[in-house]
Amino acid sequence: MEIIKERRNIKQFTNQPVDMQQVMTWLDAAGFAPNHRMVQPWEVLVIGPETRAKLNHKANFGDAPLVLAVLSKGANVAVDQEENLIATSCFVQNFLLLAWQNGVGTRWASIGSTPVARETLEVPEGYSVVGIFGVGYPMNVPSSKPRTPIVDKIKHLQ
Ligand SMILES: Cc1cc2nc3c(=O)[nH]c(=O)nc-3n(C[C@H](O)[C@H](O)[C@H](O)COP(=O)(O)O)c2cc1C
Image (cartoon, rainbow, N blue to C red; front, side, top):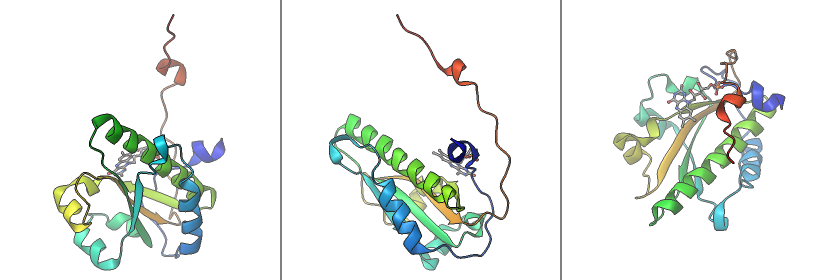
């Protein structure tokens, strides 16, 4: 439970590199996320320096030593497209938590959905960019933002 509650979106990273082999094991485990009909709609881009510079993120992804983008495959039917996004979100959360469990933080940037970023990332037609993630060791960990009590989010139906 602590892993879920203590994970934070990290703004700034140290320059300590992240072991790519370790990252691969987290991505692999993240792929055990629930997904309808085993579509496994997620795809991961490992962003190299040239692409990173072209993305021109104003905070340079918190100077993270590693930047990943997560795409979600498109679908012809709206409900399938939505299900793909839902499954990819499960994949992302798995990854964020596994990284956090290992002392590695992530910074979520949503710039990937802009037309310029899509072009830079060579995103195939129909795919969504769920996020671009700075990945690294946190310079500091922000305090938790309070959440609405879950009872206020629950409705009982007859
Ligand atoms: C779909 C999505 C897009 C997000 N985009 C951004 C973003 O562009 N920049 C940013 O700083 N954080 C972004 N975040 C992270 C949220 O700001 C962060 O999760 C929220 O403030 C709660 O903080 P916590 O994750 O540390 O608990 C995004 C999160 C989600 C789920």
